[in-house]
Amino acid sequence: MGSIGSTSRPTEGLLVGLIQFPVPVVNSRKDIEANVEKICQGTASTKAGYPGMDLIVWPEYSTQGLNVKKWLTEEFLCDIPGPETEAYAKACKDNDIWGVFSIMERNEDPNKNPFNSAIIINNKGEIVLKYHKLNPWVPIEPWYPGDLGQPVVEGPGGSVLSICICHDGMFPEQAREAAYKGCNVYIRISGYSTQVNEQWILTNRSNAWHNLMYTISVNLAGYDGVFYYFGEGQICNFDGTTLVMGHRNPWEIVTGEIFPKMADQARTDWALENNIFNVGSRGYVALPGGEKECPYTWVKDFAAGKYRLPWEDKIKIKDGSYYGYPTTGGRFGK
Image (cartoon, rainbow, N blue to C red; front, side, top):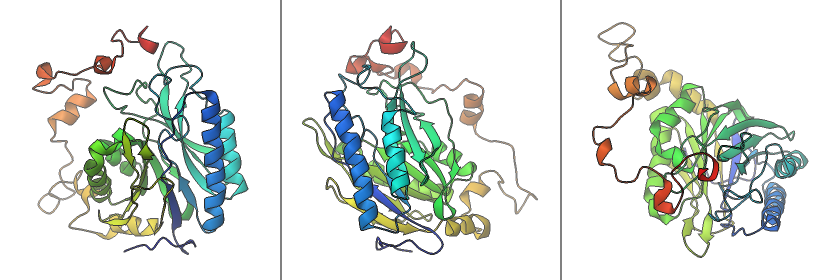
């Protein structure tokens, strides 16, 4: 099934919009405030242009940028809830739209580094999901590893939504966790530069196919003086094919209709490729009900807190010192 990026919502489904926000260069609190205003204005103008839009998605780092010298300063960090999220909530309520927003969130524990967070706000202006990035991008990101798991929430048009952030999408285990909890529309927001462009496309498709769910993904776009960010918002069908793909244009709006009930139907009606069922019911033709015992050593070791690679002692980069971060642990390395 394809999508032409309609301006109206489908009768049984939802219309989504992915905004390829220009990568912001942030040097002060005023820059953050300016970004928030742009995002709120962009939400209103996009809804005006696409009156049937149900869900709008903004990329990782769209609120606070990627200035590594500011990442861990009090001036840079935000709270949830806080003035920024209140502004986003008002924009969603005023424009009758669900929204996904990125926040670098102050940790309540002053001895721990901040979180890389994402929130979903419904069309009533309520924060209905908060997520902390489970897998900060080692070795460049200083964010504390996520502690909220992989939450899901019922969204518009029969969707069950879950979020991952950037590098999270490279872990098939995480996409499976979202699907295992019922997610049928997996959202990925990112701030990747062009080095992993092909891998971005590949993993968005594979996460959809392995789990029979839609994936909707959007990246920052443009040049920040060091790196180029590729944009390329992508909507993937539950069969792993790409329905819509953006270009590399800042402010490009990638839209598409998706039909969560069709993903749900594939999960109940498909046989040969019902991947998410078959993994836990191996060989059920020969063995009634299938084999339920886990055959994977790495899963058992991970669950027991004993995960260790055979070549682990040979790995050269295991901390953030490659990018100048201290290795003593705790907030800011203290």
